[in-house]
Image (cartoon, rainbow, N blue to C red; front, side, top):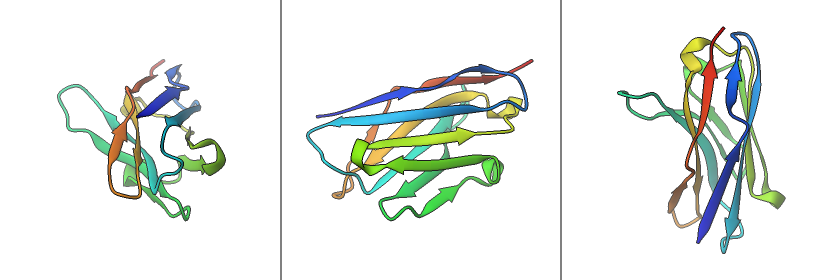
Length: 116
């Protein structure tokens, strides 16, 4: 029904940058909220950032000023620009899209590793 394709993860040194992308395809033409969560083994999944269809954004305190979320509604794609990366940002980053009738779809996740 909805397929999410994430890309952009990888290994980066502290202080470096990465840009994640998540493209949604399928039978749904638009989404109310799109966003990114992250998870470290042994810990709960946590919010990183979300953006609504009106482009209202919400960020975790730990990433404010370093990460920027954006979306391209024509492409049903959400982006996460991550700058000044820290080892604590190492996690699997998962994309979320929410339909206008509040159904959530999750991506498979992309690994981000920040290490020297």
